[in-house]
Length: 83
Image (cartoon, rainbow, N blue to C red; front, side, top):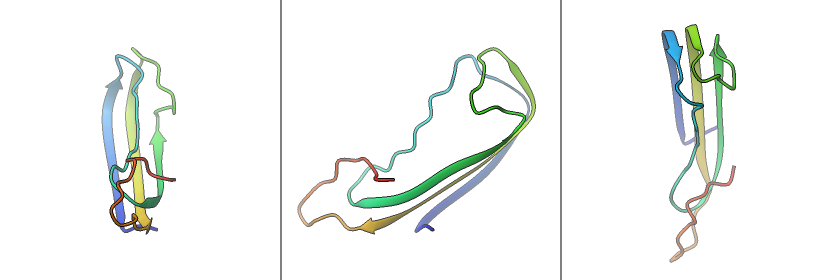
């Protein structure tokens, strides 16, 4: 899938969060989108504990999106992707 596809892999020997991170995927603009987003984590839980140190962490992230319906002429979108 996807008119746009993004993949990234990051690695850290040590990683510590001072607070629980807030994440969000948004697609501002017009039109209706179909999208997928997922990550594969090694030595990092889905919910991290602030202050805890994680060792030998790897995160592989993938995002893909495509426009499935053009916006109507003269109308602005609400900035929220359907997906």
